[in-house]
Amino acid sequence: MKNTTILLLAFGGADSIEAIPTFLKNVMSGRAPSPGMIKTVKERYCKIGGKSPITEITRLQAQALQKKLKKKSEAPLNVQIGMRHWHPFIKETLSEILDTGCKKIIAICMTPQRSNYSANGYKKDVSDGLEGLKEKPNLRFVHEWHMNHLFHEAVTERITEAMIPFKENGQKTAVIFSAHSLPLKVINNNDPYVNQINETIKGILSVTGELDWKLGYQSKGLAPGEWLEPTVDSIIESLPREGYKNVLIVPVVFVSDHVETLYDIDIVYRCQAESLGLNFQRTKSLNDSSKFIEALSEIVMQVIRH
Image (cartoon, rainbow, N blue to C red; front, side, top):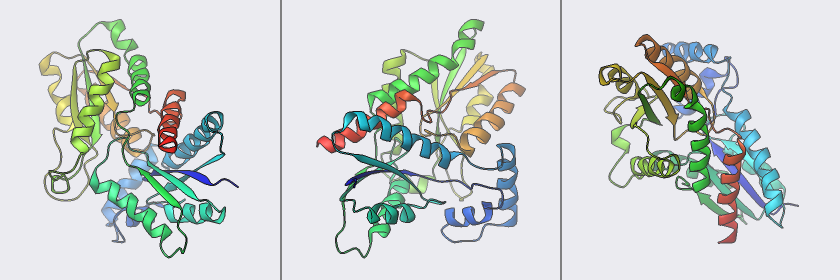
């Protein structure tokens, strides 16, 4: 019996074209998506292979993390995954965990930086999954881990690799750190999201050394009103006028490949950059890279020891 379970929490993604309408309805809190929205999302999924790989990648991360923790922890630790908007849903996974007699759960949101907007949703889903239990397990929530030094080193590895062709051509390079945009109405004065993104970048730069960088926001949703700016595409548009020949996009809030990296960056932004005569690169997602798994294991062990 494994009395402590690490629960990796991620957004989730449709695992087939046919699942997209139901997935979108889940994302929209039960509201039916319009036919136009379904068509648009289906077209994007078709261009990235017909499904989102986020669940498979999160499962690989969990398997690698469990192996790593086996070497570090005297007590056996079980690592599971739960998705907010698709199978395996957080509630489904919690039910399986509790059936094992688990006494302690360490939940980690697989987004390094925290916005109250998203973090509260994950917290509610976990709380709902534990509702009604007479004896609830001890729950520890890791909302943020944006300043973990091994996470910064994992991103730096990807930057160093992606910069190789640019160093060879010797031309002026812009590094765009990209983050998921959010509506301004949900980013109030108490929300740490933007500050934590900037702190993450500062931490990465302490490892990489100086870079010619900019911060941009991507993947704006359909909700009306103002969103975080500047957008990544507006930054790309300005680069040729500023003398840049190379552009490297570094997603700093995404740790797994999904539609926002595989379509928004690899297809839309690449096409835009190349149409402007720019050489384009994106850092590979961290996925289950050994340095990133080491970072996650360090985060878990810190919680266990305190």
